[in-house]
Length: 257
Image (cartoon, rainbow, N blue to C red; front, side, top):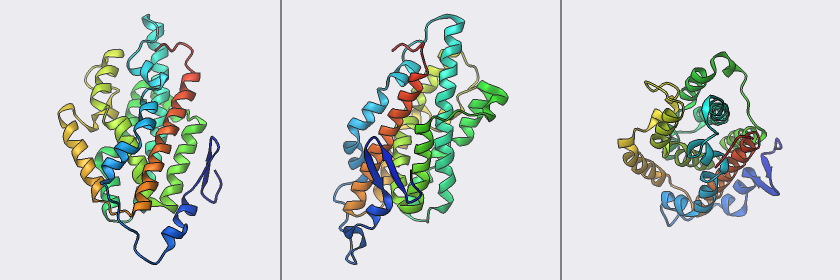
């Protein structure tokens, strides 16, 4: 990623600054408002990228499959689960770090949903699983680039942060109740130990949270081009998450789907 704000990813070149300075966005006439609620546009426009990320071999094996049996299998699975948490911690730290610079308004209301503040919960889970080794985190190259992208758009096109917040909600918060149960069972946890990350949304509150997220998204007044940019950025966020999972899977020789 260059200092000029360009992310090169698999042949794609994306520049928030170039989009913001395109003729449509620099015109003195008002940009036409988006004709469709943003929540619906995101749901419909990210379907394929979202499913590809959700159906990665790594995540399916981690939460649905098994990592062999016995004590050694549990140890291997726990090691890869911790690597997964470490990637999330890097991303949530990056997201929370840029929030103070987001101006007040509907965009800020959406980005500052309390459920999205998960960095401290992730640190608590890492401490429980790893103890002092949490101070030596592993972050793969894709995760670092994703974090850089968050900082980039925060500076150059803050409305695109909506896309990254949406991706985290769909991938992490929507699945929290189910994954909390799976992890508790997989590692025989007691009293909520090691599952603080999943406590943002309780099972009985998930539907209400989804409705609140949709309402916050639809409050954001975006022009048509800006709405399209947010959907495109969300696709990128899901795609990068899939690449992160692919990288983690390459370091998981005992993985079975």
